[in-house]
Length: 166
Picture 1 (cartoon, rainbow, N blue to C red):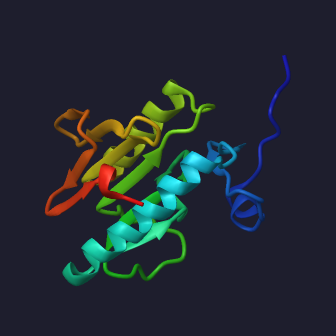
Picture 2 (cartoon, rainbow, N blue to C red):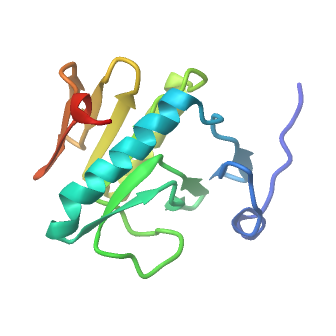
């Protein structure tokens, strides 16, 4: 059995990756390579959210590193996240309002559940999990998981109909 080489938090934070990687307890965890459907959804959703949330003081960020835990250290990189205003830090340590994960064919269900649990445990209010092909998914909060089958996702006053994106 091969063992992963452990790296320090400092090494992770000062290393460039072609597609930003995550960091889980000393291990570099590479994210799925973007494909057309995923990339299209991410770009369209970013543009739509930016238009919806700007007037209410929220900001949308693509692929921003978030420190979900400090001991043991974990850094995640959601496809998109929404914060109240512009954060003062380059790598978030305070919870965003919303984290969005767009599914790729290579995504592991177990790894996805771990990410959702980390986001919610750090204080993220909402996590959206989106299937970019079927426009279905889940809205996760600390209290519930709501299955979405009609392409309409919400987080507080933020509402997006994926079927209207282009």
